[in-house]
Image (cartoon, rainbow, N blue to C red; front, side, top):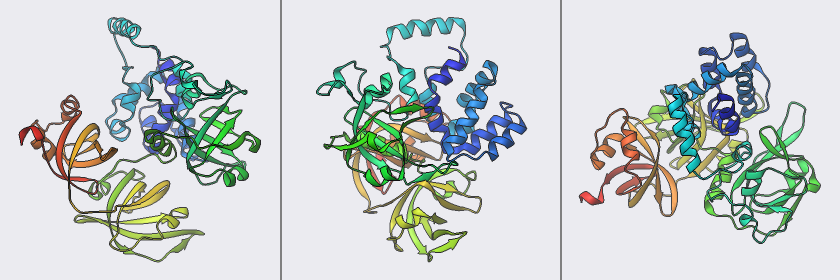
Length: 440
């Protein structure tokens, strides 16, 4: 498959992933001569309303430079060590598409694809923001009980949008009001129904006031415009009966507006590149009064984790979310940005969660996935109390418990053994001790 087709099919997923660290991908593009130094300076200085706009401009510039440039871009995304570590999600996006393959390999893959279930209209689905549906592809089955004009979010993403059709879904998450360079007010919604979730871009102060999180609405005459599915008139949104949404789609709809940065220790944060997006858990040790810096409110406090401590600054709206904090609170900060001054700054996606209990718990975990694996520590996706959580464990402890050799590529060996259950002692989001039930 040509690089153009791969990039076109997966463009939305690529953009959603790269937005987490625009500076890194811009620098890598210039270092690998995918863009000129002049283009680099222009892209660094362009005035876009959000990070998505920056990434879209960069990717479009690279794609429009020809097939050779597109192939080099694909190779960069799949093989560069820094990119693979910063954007582990790219592996899932490109897993069916190796960078280069011999004609024999391509023939084998074509035969293999013929045996696989067809994906329907996958390109149209990938162009819409939102979670990939977990359910198997359906034709009209997901329309059971619906009027002919009503589409499920699953079908919306599988076959596109018609002006005569509408979706009905629950608003799981609503962003703050944003203003474009043309002074247009807009905001984002994470919407879900019983089949999938989707991110909508909505225009107008009136709709921002009317639409509330937790309520269900009908959205009609949706417009697909580049990266987004848009709603741009008040008379196209109406409140409706409550829609029951599975927990997995609620979580996905929330992540569409608040993408989760990797949980990182304070020690590792301090050695990270500036502008790295991270999440961190720790104890509040000191709180400073609210101040104003260049007309913006700020609130500073210190966060401690074991022997390490770091300064945290909350900006504007984030100061409201931190107003109830007290010294001694154990909190989880999602989606923070590391600065050059060894401190953390809030972002528009920052979320603060008070950890209810920091006592050590003995639990049974089922390891479902691996989010990140280094020789020092491993981030595991685990099933605990019917919820999917990310827990951090020392890689030495993991290797000792599961009896494998701790080497650079140990993640591959571990992936072959999951899912598996272990007994563990946890404190917050860290695994302190663990044992394999089969060896007890």
